[in-house]
Image (cartoon, rainbow, N blue to C red; front, side, top):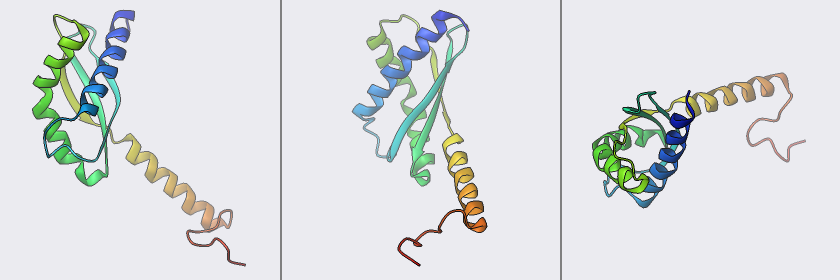
Length: 126
């Protein structure tokens, strides 16, 4: 990956996070919205933005709101970054945090079954 693409990714991610933190003015966008990463194509035409939404139940509507706001966000990025051609924003749900939580729970269950870790609510029992 070229240094230019890395710079664009880093700058876009920070600017996009700030823009979303200001609010989207769309009631569908709710919950904790976290941008977990961005990948810009080498030709700088597209940017794939990975998004995590908590609670997970709000992810569908929030992703729809982000996709609807993509043109507005792209225009705001162009102003903030002083770029003539801002890559097209493509929002994708990042399922890795959910998968990590499932794995951690599975490991905790195994430890409880082996007696290595007290189960939930077991504090203070003798």
